[in-house]
Length: 85
Ligand SMILES: [Zn+2]
Image (cartoon, rainbow, N blue to C red; front, top):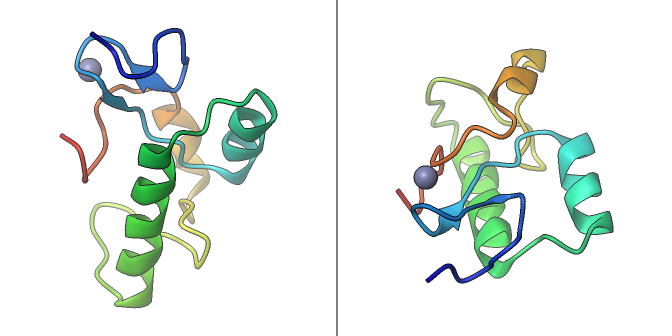
C-alpha cells in the first residue's frame, strides 16, 4: 500500500519518493501539495552532500538542486533516491 497514493512525485510501485531535482519541479510540487516529509528529507540529504563536497554523479547547489541542466532528463525517473532506495 502506497504511503502517498495519487502523488505524481511518489513511486507507487516501490513506495518511495521520486527525485525532484530542479527548483522548477520543486515549486510545482509544492504548488500541487505533493511534497511529502520524505521529499524534504531527500532534499536535505542532497544539501548535506553539497555542503560536504561529496559529489556523486552530479553536483548539487546549496539548495539541493542539480547544478546541471541535464537534470531535466531525470525528472520523473522513479527510484532515484539515494536515501530511500
Ligand atoms: Zn519504483
